[in-house]
Amino acid sequence: MGYTTISFDAWEFSKIESTDYFFSYYNKPYSLTERLNKFEALSIKTTSISFILALFPKISDLVLPILNQPNLIERDVTLYNLDSLEDSISISGPKFVFAHIVSPHRPFVFGANGEYLHQTPDFYNGYTMAIDYLNFRILHLIQKILNNSPNEPIIIIQSDHGGEIPYFGREGRIANQTLYIYQTEGGKLFILRSPPLILSE
Image 1 (cartoon, rainbow, N blue to C red):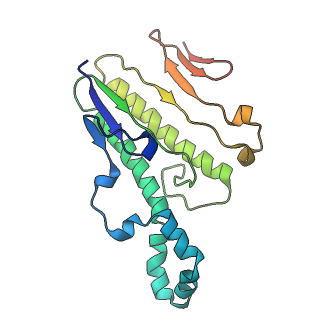
Image 2 (image 1 turned 90 degrees about the vertical axis):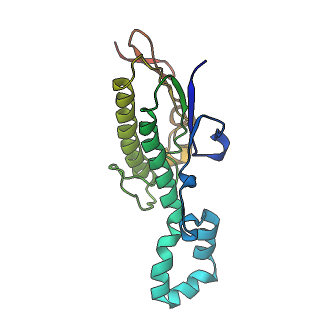
Image 3 (image 1 turned 30 degrees about the horizontal axis):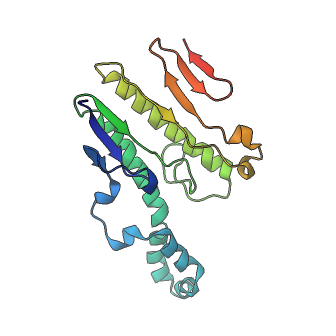
């Protein structure tokens, strides 16, 4: 049909590598200490290794930043994909773009201005700050797409689910609604839940 296909590497089960353009943070060169996974970090934090590190503060100071790498990588992947989404706008011709942004999701790694958010037990504030930043980035992206599209684009935004019941103390019917947003040719913007809302005329 003449479409250029574009996808992004974010989550194993939504990864589509057979597209014309496949953007992946993991294709960048890295050192071994930059790819410490969550299991390895947890093993160091919860075994006798942590006791040994406590005896040698200078070594501990070198190791502790490495233990935060899994969270920092999650943040870097999201930033890379958001930036690459903006870059993909410049690819000429009609295109189909699929991007799965795995955020906001524990661990929360974004402050309201995009800064690295150190882990906090306060789920609500962590979630809210991540939403603030991601809303800003997505709205900016949508506006850039609209400004640079010779023909009116079709943009579909769909959520996975809301916060789980224990986090907000609300029943699942409210907290776990799935979000679908679409805009009709006449310019009406709909949020689909129960019932649908018309945001603009």
